[in-house]
Image: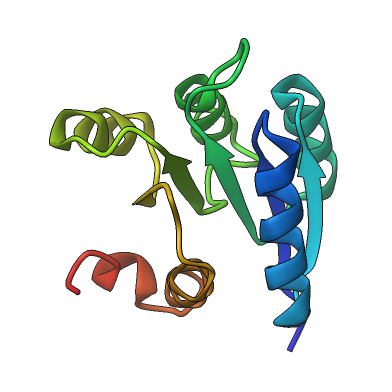
Length: 132
């Protein structure tokens, strides 16, 4: 099986370090970005297995990143996990409408993030991600 390649975008480098450390410990390749514009360019060029994006970042924010990726033919099938401190139902709905495949409120437990990534990357994971 090919190695899972993840792009994580967040304007807080400490969060990115935590994500990178834990996902690499699980055998995933992780590329991190504090700049969403640079991340979008990288994603378009490399087509990772999955994208994790914070919502509240400088322009473009995570919702715009999500919309941009879902509106490009070459990136529209890449699963996106929105990782944010916006833990209210309205925020969840906005993220889903923008094209996110999953939504995790901060603070995130790393074992939960790993579980959700693996679930999304299974053949039926996208359909079952919200059942638990």
